[in-house]
Image (cartoon, rainbow, N blue to C red; front, side, top):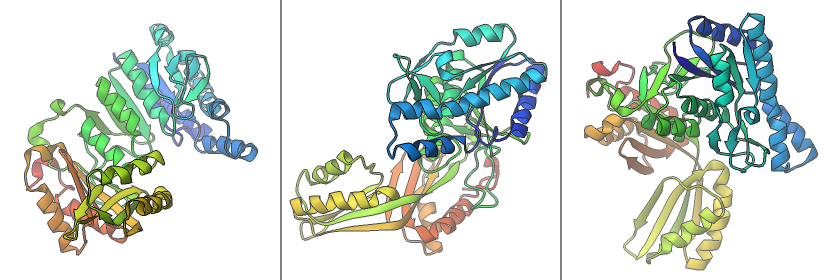
Length: 413
């Protein structure tokens, strides 16, 4: 008998029929002898409805009261799921984040979990109950309700699994696992049986929407086996685990291709090539709370430099405004912005031990006449910035070049 923590997202509990289906699934695991802790999100669309209500009253809602408001969505779901379980003869008990004592810091709307009091849950499990916990929420030291930010139910599930030392944390969603890339872009994309925490973290940060980044970080830190499964289809899903638990003989060079359309490129041209000038440019950008991603600097023969970096598309105009002020202060020539770029990234721990990955990537893109504007690399990642209109073509070309539709042992690199 094992202890499983299962998390069901908003679409999985989006109607009474779906809540009944989740109760059926949980009941089957209970019948197999597993101890069950279930974390649920609010019903699909409910959080948005509550946020809209708040904005009808306050254009910028009070953060504390906003947490009080949006946390009610999960409270509805935990009660309904427990009713559905009880109807089927299973003893079940629901808890809000505050009742479990998921203690967070006091950063409303984006709180971080600090500790969990698991005594109540363990007591219920000993008595054979299914424990149903509201995701996305906790309380601070003063007892104020806090929320963990969008997608925070994943983090709740992983944190509970870590605290309870669960055998596995299962994330049920509307996909049946982690794929080599988005199947909507590449029809031959293949579901991965396993992937490392490190690879999943890179893919999540680079645009893959399967799991919340903080949940993957938490799972990796506390070595919680994490599995992504489909809410309404049977299947093994994808197990996310440590590097050393994978068979390195069958580990592909490239595990996945992530991409992000929400990129913008900003260039400050004709910058005097002097020590400290990059800091004078990027410090005001950071102070404006604009996150910078890929950075490239080119020095010309006339002792000037062009500094180019990427930001989120929504921050492009804010970045332009900041840099126009900076340009006047340091004597730069002009600010150039391009909101029609995208980022495509190869991810794989196999890159550490294989040469030639970048060359294969660049050759594949060149064969389709796709120009690379910027490049950034790490031990297990290569990212390129390209024209947005070539994004899907690039992803398909790279998927084919690295034979990612084949099982790892079939690869011929």
